[in-house]
Amino acid sequence: MEDLSKGIKRLRHEVRALQPKLEWNIFQASNPGEQNRILDALLDAGLGEDLKRAVDLLRHFLWCYIESAVADSDPHVDYALRSKRLEQITAVLRQLNHSACPPKASMEFVERVTLSVNRRMEAHHAQEELPLEQPA
Image 1 (tube, rainbow, N blue to C red):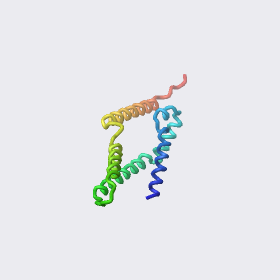
Image 2: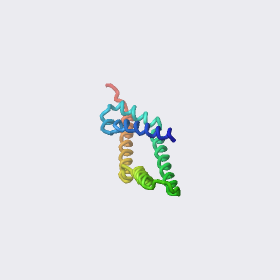
Image 3: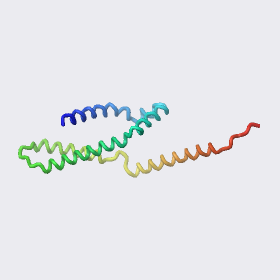
Image 4: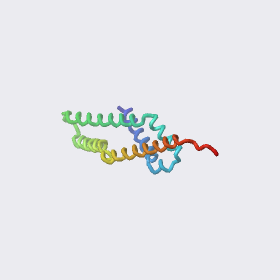
């Protein structure tokens, strides 16, 4: 378990170092080529799937701790410490369950993005289909 604790501390440090790079304003300030390179690297690396899996495992781990703490009948337990930990875990689980983007707003966003992409694709295809002007 010590390796797990060390790994979590290392990950925490790395995530904190990554946070400024994930600021949208900083991303927007970079040139389009750099933006494409960053997005390609994120998507090709399977970041979304890996991050979701890690968060799901963390959520499962925390729920298992809660169940274990409730089932534990050890008379030598520090109930004040356990209560504090359970409060912290509950707060983390609430944060993991809370979406930064409400479902309705996220669906509207997805619809707007899809519409914008479709319009651009249609405009691009229409330009490709235009006959080339013959020089007179």
